[in-house]
Image 1 (tube, rainbow, N blue to C red):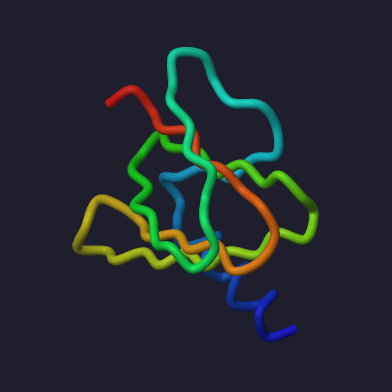
Image 2 (cartoon, rainbow, N blue to C red):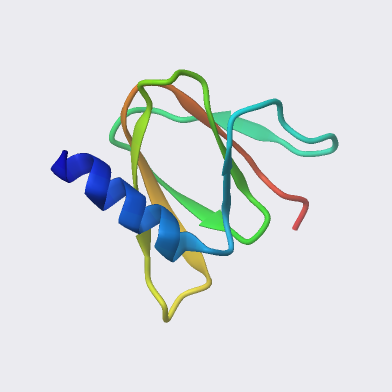
Length: 83
């Protein structure tokens, strides 16, 4: 239950990033996330869950223009925006 609360709070803090379940967008590259590997998400990047048991942490530093996302369980991919 504590993990769910922390994840929910993290999702609220992200704001500028999107987390969806679905297919990627055209003209974007994708990366299959690896467990316990941090990734930087910038405005416009999308995190797509591949399974319902996916659990991620999202760290947002208000002084930086990106969030750090780490896959803890399940499967997910990142669709990078065209920056």
